[in-house]
Length: 338
Length: 142
Image 1 (cartoon, rainbow over the protein chains, first blue to last red):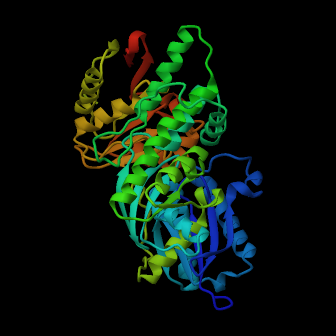
Image 2 (cartoon, rainbow over the protein chains, first blue to last red):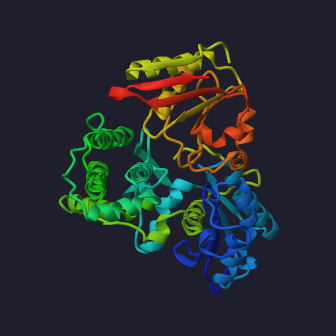
Image 3 (cartoon, rainbow over the protein chains, first blue to last red):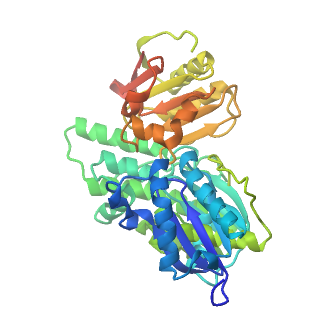
């Protein structure tokens, strides 16, 4: 507690980032440190994805210290520790969970384990201070493509998800084969603005009528087949057209299903989350379709779309307020469901 | 791993991919490793889905590219489905905690296994998938 405000320390180490944040009253970010953004990594040999648990271990203490000093608080001011306990890589998750447990024990403060996916949705509470459930959420990133009904702060009902590749992954893979490189999402987005989205007729994959699930693997194959046949025929490939047409086939299905889900569940808002929420065309299309149904669309700023500790702190705060507590036996659950 | 016929053959349809997946699943024993090698879109994840089906896995098998590994425990053996595309070598692979999986009594299926070949045991079943004419796939089992 500092200046009468409840302080949550949020720790996120589920995959690539070692990230720690201090959030006041579940809504105000006092600090938000992501290891890849600061100079810590340079001490240890450059920007490597921190998939390896060793890298999280090297980073975690420095990132916690920086999160506290950026927030101008000391560890004794913290009231609650929230930590991602899944889904993710077990070795990576364990570092965050162990750090969180140690702090909770040493400072004698409560601990709450957070589902990483709930965290992504909670990122919106940090961006939009008036936002409260209920709403429909769309979580689209490199690893996830989910439509989630959120009736309450601590209730997330997954109603649709990908059956093969995530949307961001599809962008990455196609970006690679058309030579756009990494990161695929932003590169495809940019190239698509110069291209004709009707140039190539990639088949939309809707699955069974009424389904909120997605499948992008077949679309990836369609793109590969198209590129192969064009190359074999000796025709020049217009990268911008491929990017625009492919992107359209992905985002049209996502936008359509998200809006249909919101309408069917009677939700007046769609809350986007995850890295692909920054995609220009997805935002445009979903806003268009939602507006036609009288539905608002919200999304967090790009820094809150990627993995971060603040979203974990916010989700932990609302779980804590609902009476949730984790014990010192909290363990990493790599395959944690929604 | 129980006996599986080694050699090179062609796969002409989804049904034949499924048949290969079911065969591998049937031969799988606790602690086995399947190393899948093949370019983007050759059907590594599709083959893994059919291996999962053969093991009796009930959950949807989705791409592990982002998370590196996904676990499925509803089948005859635990299935550990890896995609090491984002990694750079075998040491990094072990450092993600992979060793615990590989030494466990499940079946580990590793996509892009060529990247981590330096740390895979010599008795891993290697399945190479290549593009062939007219949408076919050339498969080499070693």
